[in-house]
Length: 384
Image (cartoon, helix red, strand yellow):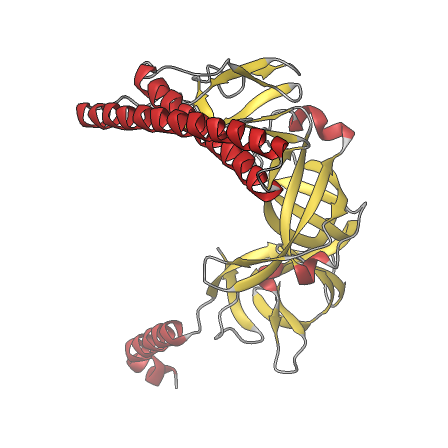
């Protein structure tokens, strides 16, 4: 036997090396996976949407009359006091007359003066007729109806003369008016409240109509937040709920509370063309967040989370580790001894980052995050 082994020792050695090589080549390798950890910490669930800040009281200053507006010299951000002068307005300037229009007015003036002379002559004649009629009526030779008719003609001719004279004065005024002149005294536009200029809607001088918005005034130190939630989400929120404001530009979330929920919804079309009913939810900043919130102005954007549930020591698993098993329940792969073990979990609250673990995993357990569909129970894995 020893002689046989001695004769075939090299062949056996080569066969063993080949067998080991084949075993190594076909041995299942560990799958590289992303790993996370089950931990205890603060967990919050709620409704998150974007919103913007706005001044609590915004005043829109409009043109009090139709006329010519002087240029507004105030810039956005300038402080204004209640009753301060914003700008002035005057009457609309007269339109310059071109040669043709002037000649037409001169001709119309001549016609109007001729009409005035005719009306005066008619009045003089009707007045003489009335005097004769009154004398005849006094002597009893003229019926009373004819006397009343004579008086009526005098009144009508007097009114016609007044209208003719008014037309002459109107045409003379148009011919005498200087081109571009303002016909009325200036009207002051006054600030209705103290604050700062938020927007300057109309800046340059020119003719504007009554009620045209000029500027908006508000107090940038007194701001609130407004978030337009879907109506089906707004009914889950109530006044006094805590709100955490993020993505506002600072490292620490701002804290606020729900002041009120507007009682009406409005139709809004999303970027995808979907019609949605939106409701405005008004947020007030908490006292501890006011110093940081003072850095925000009117119309600044932020993300708001309306807290519906929170816990400071929740046992939580990364949301990417959860998946639905064939039984319809929540599962996760726990990494134990280099293998992925399929664990059935009992999950409570879920938010965008974590799932609350009520059973199936313990604190410190390592889990596979974003497992592939080919990963199965007891597969050899290796964390990246």
